[in-house]
Image 1 (spheres, rainbow, N blue to C red):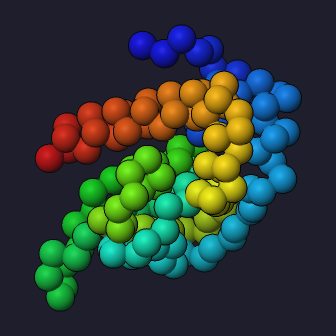
Image 2 (tube, rainbow, N blue to C red; image 1 turned 180 degrees about the horizontal axis):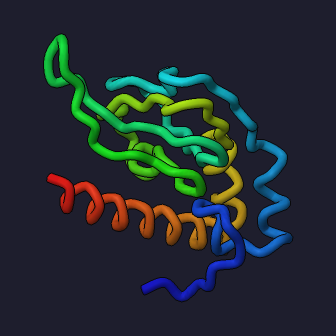
Length: 144
């Protein structure tokens, strides 16, 4: 159970107040993609987090040459990349767009630097990351 109260619709920054959100905004960027574009692939080193503002994303693995297995779908308002943000691992799935998609990218280097300087912001973002990982684990295991 989190000790924080949701303040806004952004799942990653949901516990941040207006003043705290203004500290994150300078380094977030908006990215636009068409259908079926790859955001990252298995074994990529990236640790950035992506929040879906329009469209959806598909996390998947390639079973064989002709078949891919969808692990999860990330919908508007949700984010992805939290596992690699929390733990320095290579990406373990592919991520691609489903339809026209618009994302907010939160670069690991800048977000983690802010979190080191602002422990209250760090606690709130870590709580949101924890929520997301728990929700996705439940969603994925229920589908298997």
